[in-house]
Amino acid sequence: MEKITTSSRKSEKIMNSKKIFSRYYTNVKINSDLATKRLFGYAFHMFLSEYFIVYPEGDSQEIQNRLSLNQLVDINGNPLELPLPTNRMIVFRVIKVRTNDYKGGSKTYHYLEQVDARELMEYVEE
Image (cartoon, rainbow, N blue to C red):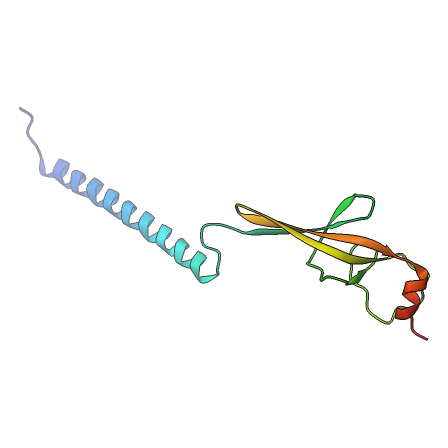
């Protein structure tokens, strides 16, 4: 039989304590990360919201934020401020909003119609 020395017992105790410490440290780190995520409002899943404009021809383009119904926008989907400087502009009106929800996010489509120059006269500064 092999004789167990005190130095080998000490080394076993040190190894066991390192394992326990590493488990404890890992648990503390994981729990603190979860607490941080809960604190800042993003727990395990992210929710992605995407917004698109759909032109009358059927082409679509991604935009930065949501638009409201009957809102006037330029060709890039940016909202226009009223009154307009002139009626000689390419302006679209949001006529329909549709949202598709899926796991982890949503896609919102804003359907546009082009506004003609006669209708724009109502919005022009005189």
